[in-house]
Length: 116
Length: 116
DNA sequence: CTGGATCCTTTAAGATACTG
DNA sequence: CAGTATCTTAAAGGATCCAG
Image (cartoon, rainbow over all chains, first blue to last red; front, side):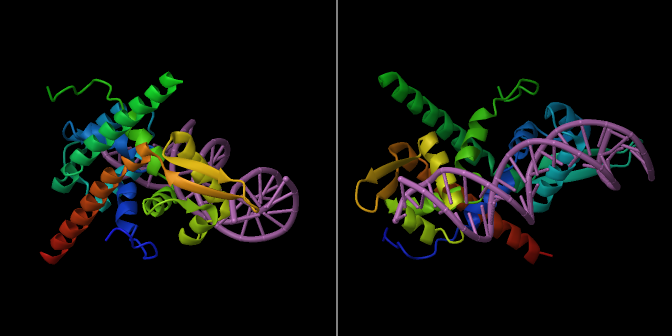
């Protein structure tokens, strides 16, 4: 049951998660939001080096996908809070495992160097 | 111990895995290689739509990182086999979980639509 | 068969000034 | 404060032809 060599494997699910995590800023933004809701300006400060244009673009992407929520308050001036949705929170374990894998992988690569 | 709001979170490990999986073709190539070793031409055929230039580039990337092995045989004409390294194989569970997450996420998103 | 080299198009991202 | 608009640059990817 492990050899379906020539069948078409559906990649779309795998590719989908890259739309959520890919690009230069999404991971950075998401890791900030795992600490709790943030206003636009807070994110702009904390995600160092991002321009407002990129920040709003990435936030819109994530909102469209359903990973984050955008809530506006009619204060003067207006304030906006971004937070992870319930579905966005389910991504956390995956991120943790990705991180663990990366750390383990780098460690192994390091050991190989040492053995030479 | 879950509130280190202003400390710098190390993103490099997370970003690293995107170097392995990111781009248009890496996932596609890797999923093919999980079925076993492949020659260049086999990959070119199976990864539909890829050009030799992109294929060789992605293969080199993956080889440099240490995810795949490249083995040449002095036949005429020369043949080359690509296969996953031991470390490359450890990536499989992560990919499976990413896929599961994506499937679950899409299902939930679908349910929300239905509730309207 | 396995690539390298070249040229071209498309997409991602950066800089900066501006508005409700 | 929370974004838009515009312009520019950098990177990714595609097409095609060629060589050992």
